[in-house]
Length: 143
Image 1 (cartoon, rainbow, N blue to C red):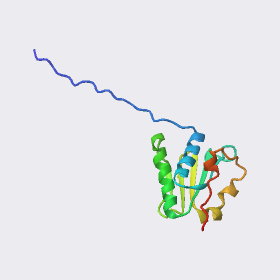
Image 2 (tube, rainbow, N blue to C red; image 1 turned 135 degrees about the horizontal axis):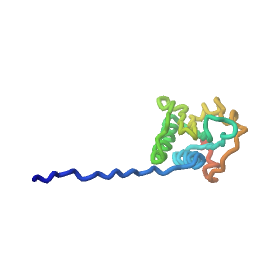
Image 3 (cartoon, rainbow, N blue to C red; image 1 turned 90 degrees about the horizontal axis):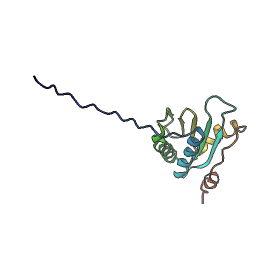
Image 4 (cartoon, rainbow, N blue to C red; image 1 turned 135 degrees about the vertical axis):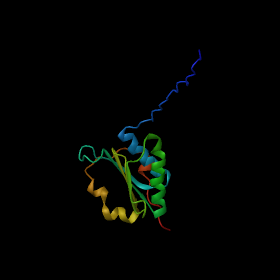
């Protein structure tokens, strides 16, 4: 009688990704933007006035390259928590919108931010408290 060999059972190990609350994700986006020298960074809680997202992050950069670097920093920094749902505007890098479902991130080249004035549009939304250095980050003055 021949003994039939069987393959060993493979164990499937699932690793759960760490998670962030909507607020934590928004604040982390602000921190990652600040790491790339972004300025005028705001996190707005729009959960009570809009159904499109819970939080809105608005940040500025002084050049196309900086705007792209800020968006890349956010995408890479949040990758361990899940992928971004959609990104628009990366080709021109004047206004990049990143959709994380519960958090929308708008990274503007400085002149476009004042033109579209999302800060004014969402002025009734309360601001989320950020670290002082992030809250106080302003555009470097031209000498």
